[in-house]
Image (cartoon, rainbow, N blue to C red; front, side, top):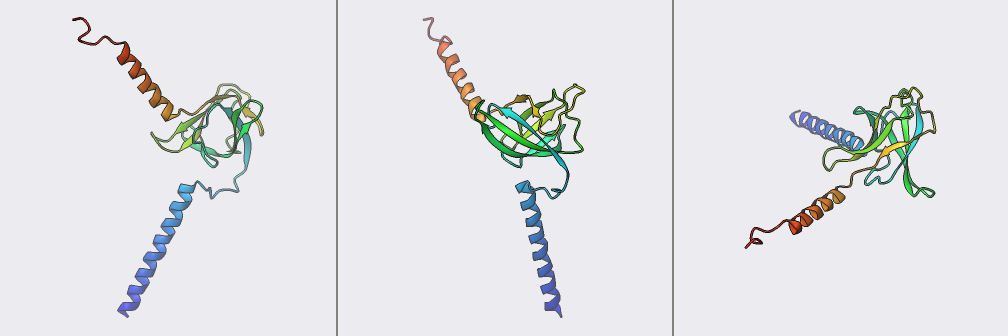
Length: 163
């Protein structure tokens, strides 16, 4: 009898562990369990999307309002076209809103943050968010910092140059 209860306890522990792993896998992958939620589609053009991926979050004031559904290169403008699915109940995005590519933390995932505008006209299905701010590339910032530091050291007079 003691062995049977031990086997049930071990089996329960394994099932709970597998359920926890499944939950974590779904959370990390960004798969949404509310896929039946009605959406409408918007798009935006960015000069540089550096690390943004399909299924990335779209947020407004820190709240998820949709997902990135597609990324392509616009052949006419040679910019990145980002397609987004926005939850239907978030239909108050005005035509002068700004879409920015942001990062969770210093090296975290990229996502799109929308800052609402003041215009009374709202975007509809298939409309474009015209005002965008591209992603900051960490490598570019580091190289600018290092380059500026190197030029500053070259142009600064040395302590021994006056003698």
